[in-house]
Image (cartoon, rainbow, N blue to C red):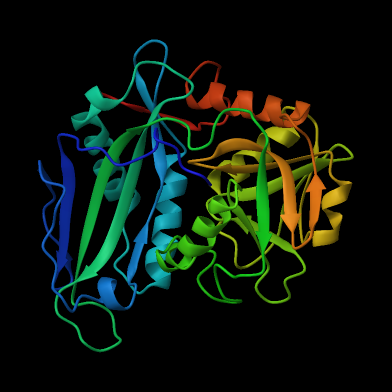
Length: 331
């Protein structure tokens, strides 16, 4: 999605550092430096052996801080590590790294504001000397945070470009959060933004006939009292999307369908949105493919608006959490 000035890196006080050496995790450290030393022949630099996560901490009205479904991030992180032949992180290790990093940088989390949060980036990279295509001899697990605003601008419905380029290969790493899925999309997104589009929507890499996902978010549509989102092995499973499916069914009584969505079905939807940690819930105004533009709406749709507000109310602790989504960070 199109980043704005409110979504970027910022120097904070403390960063989580932990090394995996000779088959064992070393004791973690918190350092004031955001820099690390890495061998020139590291697998993360040459072969893309690295994984990461994206999550947020939110400030409640009462001043407390909470995370949103962090164990789902831990689970997805392990899945990515397993796919990339990297050491796995336990729930306890992941939660300690995340919560302690948030606590030590709590002053950077803005006061209660539905447009502001503290972005959290856990990541792991292969380090140490390794010339051949094989798993790294050692690994670095780190966490940094940054105060951010909204990735996209409010409820305005922007225009998006459908491309024939691929972000991931069929049966590849598309369903895992690895850097290689994003590096190849940088030029594609850059070119689309220069044409005035917010972001790009990728089609399925096998046939280019079904909707897959945006560069940094999942896609969903609303029609006939049904919340519809694509089913594909090349899509990253969004925790935000999973939450919206639950809320759509339980709170608003919608049917939920995860299925292949033909490109030609775009015209059948009353509302279309993008969803993810950075994007939150963003309405789609139009989708352009080749010489045809599908106009959806100039503003956020009624169901999308309700889903977004409910999601934000849960994330910021404004309403009772019946699902156990909220996890407090004790300062």
